Length: 98
Image (cartoon, rainbow, N blue to C red; front, side, top):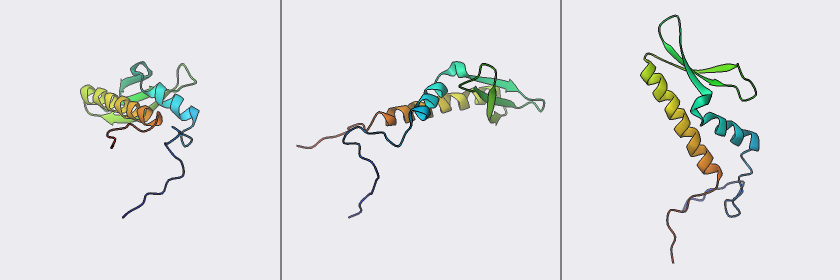
């Protein structure tokens, strides 16, 4: 039998490994209004997110060949961070036994 060792427990819904700042950043990433796509001089499209504490500082994330694939990359990032936020709430019970 294999045992998995962890340094925290979900039994008390503890998410001590995830800071409030990290959760706030993930919440920032899941809002599509905080993303944009810019066209680069070489014709590629770059996805960027708005820095949390700034109104005009954008950070580049990915480069794609088409605007459609750039938007798909943003949608994938939003989905990814939504899953992380769900995980931060604690474990999802999928089956119980009697």
